[in-house]
Image 1 (tube, rainbow, N blue to C red):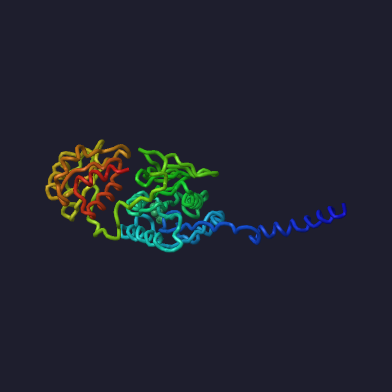
Image 2: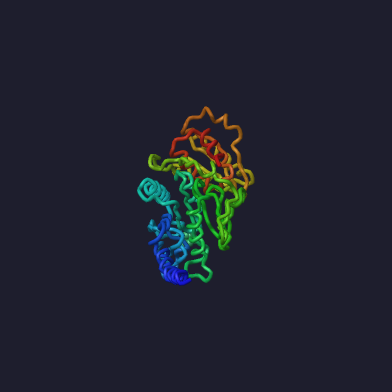
Length: 361
Ligand code: GLU
């Protein structure tokens, strides 16, 4: 009895010691280190304080305490601009920076790019074509300014890091996260000027959701996320980007903008066509002249959703790189079709290959 009582007392004394040891990691295995997520901050409404300037990426991350339990977040300030000021040179820089970090020691498990929402879909689509590997890239921002009541930036940033560390994100390439919704870069577009739910994927729907308890995926990752994708284009070896312009079709549109684009040296033209890609007779004649001068015309549409096909690609097969031709932009809206055409021309693709490339989902 007496011995049992002493043992019980001993256990009672030891329990707090063991709990303290467990809490401090002195007993048993150390907790696994948190995965590294790298934030590349570029500016946008998520950082905008109006007359008071802009928050840095470090400040955005520091203001979200739950991030500390989720990931080891490192931050670099790539730029701090409205997204209308983002340039193609900056796109190349971000793609190269990610490749550099991926090749280094302590490579992150995911990247989060903070970006203005106005051109976010373009940057995301460019990165989806130029960043390879299994490591996800999440592009996010905010519809409401950083100091606004009900600012959405912190939740978007937190959810982006949640997606970046989620095993289900591997192999999915570049995505956009806004308003708890995850979109594939190819499919997403900003379809409202102001609302929190401004981002949509009109043809393909959301890729997944950042729900409070779990990240939900509505589509399976290519190869189940086990195969790392090769980048479609290697920015390290691509030549200069050629000029590619966008012209809109509408009643009364004449040939002026098309002729001006060709005179300015455009090697590609994207038509935001009516319906399935139509234009006015004056525009059609100007496009024919442009084609004869070696310009590749990618026909998109101004409807906001739906495909424009190329027709039989075989008729383009005999055309060499540098020949003028017509291709359909599939579901790509004009601003995204411009990016793919620009990259394909920079890579010296033949028209038939450009047509096929537009159909790769
Ligand atoms: N929505 C704008 C953008 O896309 C915000 C501009 C700003 O931050 O000043 O960048």
